[in-house]
Amino acid sequence: MTTHPTDTASAGSLTVPGARLHYEVRGEGPLIVLAGAPMDAAAFAPLAELLATDHTVLTTDPRGINRSSLDDPEQESTPPLRADDLARLIAHVGSGPAVAVGSSGGAVSVLALVQTRPDLVHTVVAHEPPLIELLEDRERLRAGTEDLIATYLAGDVTRAWKKFFAQADIAMPEPLIEQMFGGERDPRQVADERRWFAHEMRASTYWRPDPAALRTAATRVLVGVGDDSAGQLCDRTSRALARSLGTEATTFPGGHTGFVENPDVFAARLRAVVRGD
Image 1 (spheres, rainbow, N blue to C red):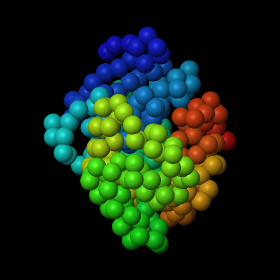
Image 2: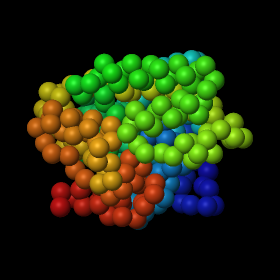
Image 3: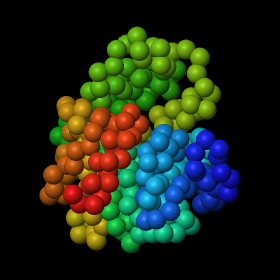
């Protein structure tokens, strides 16, 4: 393992069926896993550093993203596959059972992990999982998803992103979208983005959780939603999931990526939630 001078992370690589997973470990103590999809380990680094003062914190690039390479680049990234990857990483790192915190597609991954390996996670926080199948307008949303994916794969990247933000009910000015996605871009970012559109978005958003399995698991399952996400698609999906589990959504500061925008306050809230305050 190698230590990066910019932070306290030790990086490693774990070979799993069909892939080699890049992962990072910080700190010592009870294990917390921070999982995204398609978001990679780098996005969680500030939050991980804050939690590593008294925890072992595991982050990873999901299979096919950034430093986690695939044997078959066209393989679909499904929640069960990503859950199996997380299970193997937790077993490899040790210090479990863990707290697993998943964001967006990563929230879907950790829910799938509860359904397959509840023995590895004693608490799961699924922060804004985009589970459109739980909503009454799922057919409209599926049609919109197919349309925006087709638009992206046809080469109209900015138009695809405009459709994405519109369907997500996230207000994003068109000039900003053009600025973010229309000019020269990092090739790695483009490759990861294409993989998400082509091989991950459907599997994550069309996945149906098993509410009975989640309710009866020994794992404590919490559904997180951002204070600033009211009215957005992931606010609706998160609250629908919480209802299916017979619980209330747990609020966190910020929006869909609040842990990136203000990791300090997010970490404080996460600590309180995990303690049960």
